[in-house]
Image (cartoon, rainbow, N blue to C red; front, side, top):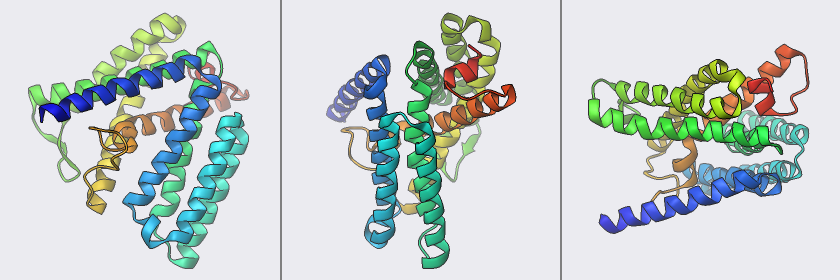
Length: 277
């Protein structure tokens, strides 16, 4: 157990350093990271849902779609990324109705594809994107850490006992409160004029992050697996590490689009759209 804990800590530190370095540099470095995360998530999704072994033709189409999205993400073309995502989602839905393919196929297309798109779009190419990405990280990581410790310290009623027996309402509330504090602190230094808005966004992203965690737990329980894969020593798979981040990024991406629509302008930067800078 002690050796496993050491392995978990070492691999966790290495991953955190690599992610933060890519976030700092932005540009192609972060786009490549985003595309890679999307591809690895699809690999794990197709393995968990047995698409890879039971429905190889559909799985091949899924890989083609994820590859197209990854190329568009690295090229920095948000429009093409969304077009490819919509196109292959519609193809996947068609396979569900025509060929009887699992309904998890189109869900996986969106789950993996939108992850890469949302991550790269949040980071963008400027300093606003850097702080927007750090804001999301701060919210998700504080939610995850404090939800665990508050839940263990206080206990109480279970949040979703049939899906994830270890999670409690006290942990969920503690995670949300810590996310609001962490997000507000980042906003205070990066977007001081938007602290109140940032606190509201932080709360929404925290709820979405915890929902993402529960969603992945549901998928694993549904298909009887413990870890999404064994790609990360001591941690399991990529989905096990970014489940909360995925839903938080989805929410940030959708909120930015909504804010841009309300303002009547083009969504050129997620950070600018979210924080009005």
